[in-house]
Length: 124
Image 1: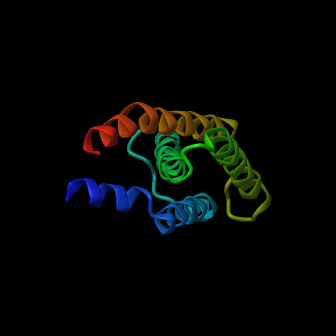
Image 2: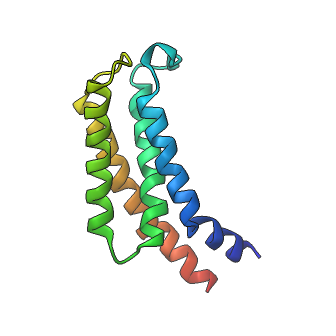
């Protein structure tokens, strides 16, 4: 029961696309409407968490396309930063956000490869 529930959630393409869409919405949301974080650099933790989730979903759907997913994730994060700079939403381009996105992608890969794959192997 737990195995099939977990597998159906992680391998759901619709959830992966929903995650991708929510990242887009969060990154282009007007800056003035964003609440202040409880700590300095909180937005970097948010970027990290968003891209960990992105990587885990997409890498589980396409396990043999790791480099492609990591590259697409990096380009997606970079593109969102450019979008933030170009749009009049009081948001700016930030290299630290791109770094947080990239670290999130790599951590997502690590979580998927070292934890989820081993856990799912035990279930099968």
